[in-house]
Length: 395
Image (cartoon, rainbow, N blue to C red):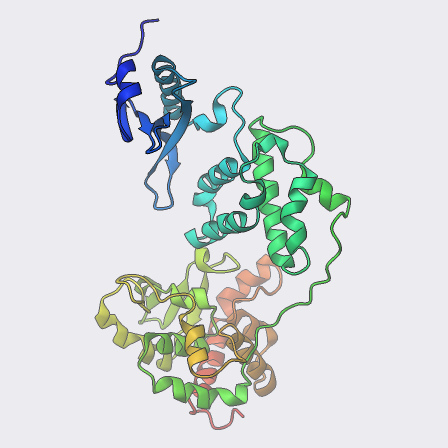
């Protein structure tokens, strides 16, 4: 086979100064300030996207110039380009090259980005591994990781941060499963072995309840909120009235609001239960959001950046500024539910569906969605009247 040609020469490889020097076809000679010289090839693997949805460009190391000649580097770069055009990640498909745990984990993260509910969930998946796994096993070849290595990640946090530890465990297991499917590992997954052998102590987790405000105290609190002009105050007012979750409220786009029918339709991809949820809008809710249309933003509750929603912590921080240290934003859902139980005679399924909780079988829920909207509207109207001080018989 005729030698592959490029811009560099053997003499240049040895004499060029610090920096990145291209040979063509994505192949580059990288010269460090220390004088160390190594080869990399920059490629776009067909079908792979970054978190913004754009083609993902990745650098692949080919080795130092002391062991990989210019001709060898060109041949390897050509081989890598062929793989990339076929949608094969060279890091996982070059013979005899065992990737590290971190390399596989990051690739799994990239491959699964399109399947996550939103980018934040995908980032959380990777962040837990960055914090608890990469420092311990990140640089280890994926085929060398066994039970002892897994325990170095899990044991320190198993009792103190049990929920986090379980998530770390699940994510390590997923990475190792992918590695096995790629041919980099054999045998049982060590995470499964640790679980089956009950190596780690049993932790009895007590359910944590979100601190809620007494429903009797909400009208005076709401009046205080109403006196404030901050966007976070308007978002929290809307949250109190709708009984919705923080992420559902902050992610509202104007396209979800129908003023004619008086409905806010939250799409399935933003709902915890992955089912579309409709919230009847009361006049008080409309009075909160309608003036915000003048901002001409994509989001109803715009944050500091144009066409971006308020931060996830904005309402909680407002509560802290108001000296409400024993209350959480999520707790207002419980406040509504307690009020509905103690003050009204609303059927349980009406109150539960107002909070987008699942009630009954799939068939029953489908029936309820079509038949209970009017009853939910009546309940939420009465709640809105109570919160704003207009319902004199509510408590």
